[in-house]
Image (cartoon, rainbow over all chains, first blue to last red; front, side):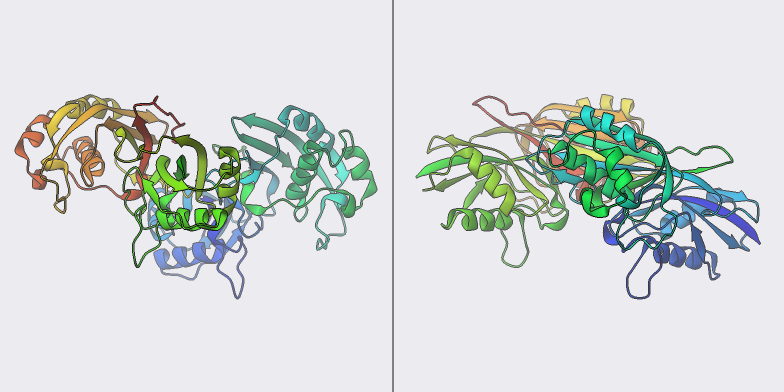
Length: 255
Length: 255
C-alpha cells in the first residue's frame, strides 16, 4: 500500500463542512466518492482538520492509503476531473506510511476576508463577509498583536467547545486592507472551535467602538466567552496554509 | 414623475439573463420586484441591453419612472437591502424624462475572463471559463486588433440572430494576462447575438492552432458562421461598461 498526501482547495459554500456526516453532504464525502470511483477501491481519507459548514480552504491537506500504481500527476488530473467544480486537487506526493495529515500537523494559518462597504459586492456573497461600518485596519492590526503568544483562549472558544485544555499558541496575527477588502491573517499551533471567528468578531467590535482598544489582554484573562465579540459568519473564513515539519508548503492566498 | 437612472452590478449565475420571461427568473424581475416593494408602486424598468443566462454585469444601466420623493442615496441603500445578494445597486441619479438607458447608449464594453490552467479554481466556477491549453495572450492581443473597425460581423453572430444589418463598429479589443487569468476586453458601438463569445472562441481556436494566425480578416469577409470558433460558455462574460454621451461612466473591472 502507498500512503499519498494530497493538497486540496475548496469553496465550502455548498458543503456542510469537511467531516463526513450521516445526513449532510460534506467535502470529505465528495472527495472519497471521487477517489473511490477513480481508483476502483474503497478509499477513506484522513484530513488535517475539521472545517465548518460554509468555510473554505485555499490549502487543505489529507492522506490516504491505496494500492493504485497511478503516478501523482495522473492522480491530480484524474481526481480533478472526477471532483465537483468547487473542489480542486492542487498537489499529490507519496509520504512515509506513518505520516498523518492531522497528527503530523505543526500549525495552521487562517485568513478571514471582510468586504468593508456600504454597498454589497454581488460576486462575493459566499466568499467574504460584509461589514458596513468603516474599519480602521491599522488599529486592528495593532490590537491583533495582543493575541500573539501562548494564552488560555477559553474566552475565544464556542460554548460548545469540549476541550479541557484551552491553551493555544498564536504565532502571528496581521490585519491588512486592500481597497474595500480587509484581511485578517492568523497563524498558530492549533485553534479551538470557532476561535478564529470569535477573534475576528472581537476585533470588529473594537473597530465599531463596542469594545475599547487595549481590551484584548483583559478579555483573554477573563476566560469569559460572554465578554468577547460575536462569532462572525463562516463565508469569510479560509484555511489558508497547513504547516508540517518537512518544509512549509505555501499556496497563494485569496483576496 | 421622476426618471431615475440606476447602475447595477450582478452575478448572473442564478438568473436566466436580464430580460423578463414568463417561465424563468431573471435579473429584471428581481429588480422590478425589489423596486415595487420598496416604493409601493408598480415599477417597470428599461434596461440598456439583454444579457444571456449566466452572464454577469460589472455595470448595467437602467431607467424607470417613479412618483417617489426618496433621494438617490436613500434609494441606493434601500434597494440594496431589498435585492438578493447577487444584485447590487451602485449608483442612482435623476435624468431628463427623454433619457432611455437603451436608446441613448453610445456603446458598450465587455470583458471575458478565462482561467487558463490545467487545474481548476474552485472559487470561480461561475465567474470565469476554464481553458486548459496554455494561451499565448500576446499573440491573441495582436490578432484581436483585426476585429477593430466597422465590419459586417455575420460570421461572428449566432445562427439565431435575426438582425438584417450585421455591421457593427469595434472600438478596441485587448487581450491581457495576469497570472492564470486571461482577460479579453472589447468595446464597440453594439454587439450581435453571441458576438463577443464567438470572437473570444475564435481567438482561443487560434491559440490552440485550430485556426491559423492572420485568419480574422478572411473570416470576417466570409460572413460564414461555420468557419469561426465556438461560442464560449456564458460564465466568463461580463458587461463591463456602458457609454453615454453625458460623460463616460467607469466602474472597476473584475479579474
